Amino acid sequence: MKFLGFKRKDGSVGVRNHVLILPSCACASETCRVVASQVLGTKNVIINVGCSDVTANTEMTQRVLTGFALNANVFGVVVIGLGCETVGHRELAEKIRMLSDKPVVSFGIQEEGGTIKTAALAVEAARKMVEEASKLQKVECDASDLFVAIECGGSDATSGIASNPAVGSMADKIYDLGGITMMSETVEFIGAEHVLAKRGETPEIHDQIIRICEEYEKHLALAGQDCRSGQPTPGNKVGGLSTIEEKSLGCIHKGGTRPVSEVLQEAARPTKKGALIMDTPGYDISSVTSMVAGGATIVVFTTGRGTPTGHALAPVIKVTGNPLTAERMKDNMDIDVSGILEGEETINQAGERILKEVLEVAGGKVTKAEALGFSDIAVDHVCRYI
Image 1: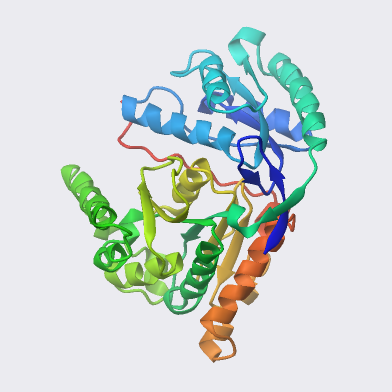
Image 2: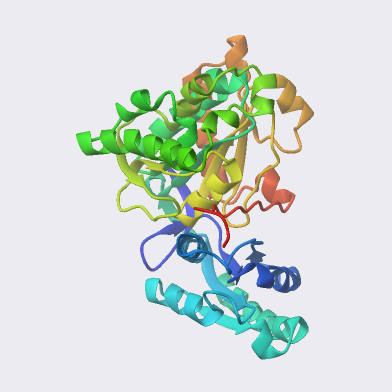
């Protein structure tokens, strides 16, 4: 199975060809937005982090920002910083240069004399970069070049019996074709981690899956918290999910059945192909943020109650198994698999249909969230601000 994509010099394959306007801290986010609004072909992200953090949070932020820049959907990067943040624009730009051969430039708002002067310089640099990006032609790529993040949010009873199993079928098909799928949300494995761990390719991976769940609960306990106070969410309960175990059993379906080849820390880049797990929180936007930072170029997102979520750098395909949601939120939903509930479609057939959609989106088809220009970013905090 083939699609037309963008081959990068490092061998990775992008499904989009963006120039990224990247803030090094929250204080530069709005200036980045101003720049991106003036140059077609650019994308910006809004972040709420980047300064006044403890070391672990700073490291997390740097992994996410660097990961966004390294994503195969990005041609080049314009970094904008304020000038007094923890990790400055020059340092971030240099790190990106060290890890890739992408064009990178950077500017500091304080150094250039304010937003208007900085934006003028950044707009000119971005315009030239977009011109270079436009020269890159799409080439035929194999399905083995796909890197798909799998996410769920706003789950209800239909998620575990329709949309998640259908996406799991798609995940198995991508695995069999030689591609990468990545599932996250550690807290939503809890109660079903022993089932998921059986998919570990080795005893070590089996134990890692159990361990990340144990460590998540211990981390919360040290702060006097219990993950069950927030799981299931109020919307989950209204949708028919009564316990975290019930939610987790539905959640893990979306990852398919194939062996898990690697367990990654949050926002880390994989070293293997196949079915992967990333250790992230249960907040869907934060999980998607981390998986895109880890290199995912497409996101397949299941939802029972519905969500408008999108991402600036990776197209997000929304799948629902709830017929009411499919109709009520048709501005946001890309695929309706509620036929599974009615016996009109098998899980395997729905999986085939989702895979076909993934290939079409990889080839350039615009998702509902892309058409609306949506971008949801949430960088996880290891601990609170100092």
